[in-house]
Image 1 (tube, rainbow, N blue to C red):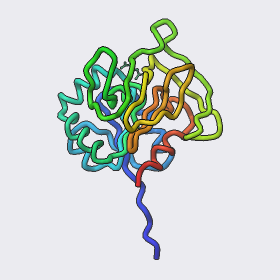
Image 2 (cartoon, rainbow, N blue to C red):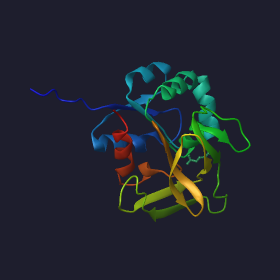
Image 3 (cartoon, rainbow, N blue to C red):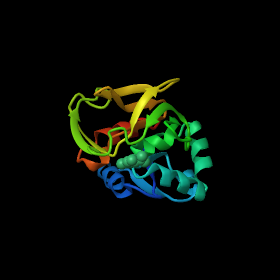
Length: 194
Ligand code: GLN
């Protein structure tokens, strides 16, 4: 008899930011979720989502909770990771005008790239890598990727700014798929698990 494959457990960094929205989306897809608050939690997960929030605060909390170093090591060893918005900033090797946080992905990021006046908006765009159908893209005081280098690949540019990229086990979007009803990007992330 064929052995039934058990559903993966996806961790969500739960120090700050949009945790619940990612949780409900993952539950809709039928995978297990775990809120990551301690380094031990990293041993119990098959992949991790770094949610949106405030990257300076998240970066400080990562260190305070002793998660930064083990998380960085796990990602460098191939743990699938999906960073949305502030999560993207945490992964970047370069942040304009600031020191990096985890510094694992070959991208240069500009925070609050869309200015303060129009700091939130919704677009509808096709991202071929995810789906041939247009996706709803929600930007909330979003960062943009100024450039990719090394092994990172651009997945989507919008109005001259890079808004999605991938480097092996790392996926980033400057928008928030968890704030829509569409599970496409989360399903794509799960396909990155072995
Ligand atoms: N503006 C936030 C930052 O720079 C990111 C916003 C978000 O995650 N929605 O950290």
